[in-house]
Each structure stands twice: as structure tokens, then as C-alpha cells.
Length: 131
Image (cartoon, one colour):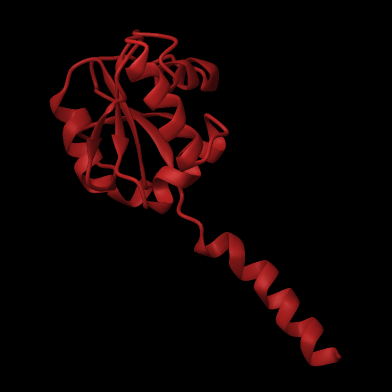
């Protein structure tokens, strides 16, 4: 019984370590004063204040970002964007392959935002939000 408790406790402490960190990034020339709600609006097609980029499905960074910002799972996002596309209300953000590519795309695209693992962020972009 004592061993089972120790294993359970170890699992609880290890779980946060396995989650990817995520920060919201922007092109250096803007936007720079976005709140969590502003970013949520960009990723849910409620605002066109900036151009958002998305990491491809299956990424821990993508999952953590959407848990934090939109509160939606991959399947909920897929359903949301299918409806937006079908009704002609919008298209999903352009996708990049991974966090490092996200930094490259945001750095190369004026007035864009994205999210990335902090380990991939360099001075070519600006961190505008952290959890």
C-alpha cells in the first residue's frame, strides 16, 4: 500500500513536468498589447486585429495553448472551423509544423501572432503573453 502511494505521488509531481510550456508571441512591429481575451478572439475568428498562426494537430504546445486560451480541444476546434468554413464566415489560421517554425513565420509576417515553446523563442519575435 505504501509503495502504491509513493507511485501515485510521483505521478502527480511528474505530470506538470511533462507538459510543454507555451508563450504567445508577436511580430516585433506589433501587435504588442493583447490580452488573453484578445488572443482568444483572434483564434476563434472574432477579431482580425492580427494574423494568427496555428501549430499542426498533435503538438503538446498546441494543446496547452488551446487549454489556456480558447478552452477547446482539437476535436472542438476542428468542428468550430468546419462550421466557420461551411457558412463562409472564415478560414482557420494557417498552420506551421512545429514551435520553431512558428517563431520563423511570426518573425517573417508583420502584424502576426502565434504561440511557441519558450525554448524556441529568440529575439526575432516579441513575447506578449505568458501563462
